[in-house]
Length: 231
Image: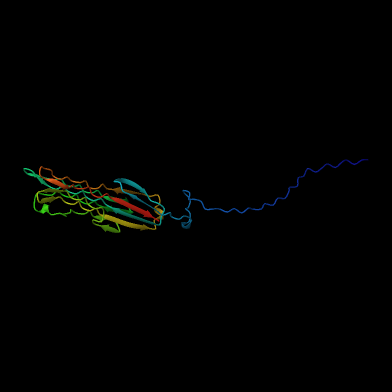
């Protein structure tokens, strides 16, 4: 009697697999919001500088740096006009004051440098026949250095002449200077500071009349400038 054929077993024997882990090198990435920033040594400040020489208000965004310096020169006042005479005194007009400079952020700093005073107009008197009179200089505050009159020069005075006599106005006052250096300020990156550059003082005008000659017109004060640098 023939034996029945044996059926093939359906039992599956799993193939043995060996998983070999691969090494992955995690490279530094930029900081992501909500995740701890990179170690200090992973980023290095890039030195830079700029300046602001046009009157106006600016928003300065603080760079990534270790050291930051600012140096501001306030504008000068305008020169005052000289007098003239023709059937009576013909007065000149005074110069305008220079505007102020400011670098500010609440709780951090408030550097201010004021412009020079405007030069008064000269009078019809003996004192106005002497040159070189200059009005008050601007003052400064809030900086590591605050220099009265250390900013831009005031405008020259007006002069008129008749016969052998010259009359003079007043020279405008110099603006102030203020400066400071900040260190260990990497965490200030992205903060905004307000920066103000004032206008130079306007020039006065000489009195005019027949027989009086203008030998020098009053001038506008020097323009204010703010210099910033970081590293």
